[in-house]
Image (cartoon, rainbow, N blue to C red; front, side):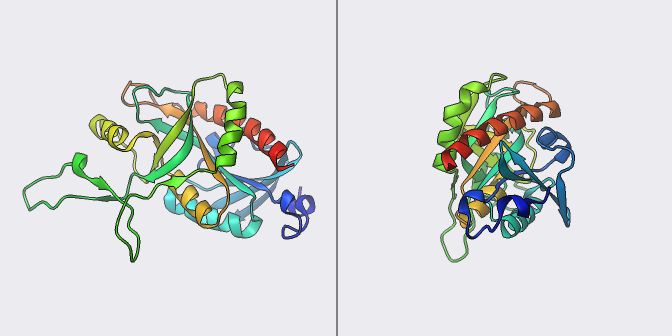
Length: 258
């Protein structure tokens, strides 16, 4: 199925600009959404699957893991498809004692947990990650922690359908993102307590930052795959739950578009 035949002229038919769903791992985070006979566009390490969900054009983007890969995929996807909204979905690790496997985290806010300024220490003073300050480095401006926001309309759509998710809790709050996998419990609790981070992943910050720069509505739907604090081991099979919920969200969002 050629997406161009579905959406027509993007510039003249704004309602038919596709929704882009972006996830890192194709086999575990897009496997439910993918169908046979999709048109596939490969660009570098990225894959774009062109399809429809509930009769509306959708592009599934497999970005590969990490912020750099995701940034490349975002730019390519935006330039090629001019999406009307971007949904980032996939797995995330819990950073709270109250968050458990199968819980859905709705990223109302995003911060970069891999962007930090360390205190000045001399040779032999050692290192202490609990004293690292999260900051966003902004050219020509004072360094500060910049918080990226999700689209309010997409958040409202999630709230309208959240009761349809029955595998765990639906929790709204801040996601931390960066090319790091935290396994130190004290560091995890530090990020949770000081910066109110509920879970962490390796892609969302790139998705939000670029989407917001292009003024494209964005939201992240993350399924908890593990919790190091409580000893809940990593389980990639949870990825299916997030995808089923994303389909429900798209149905509601398309109603709003119409």
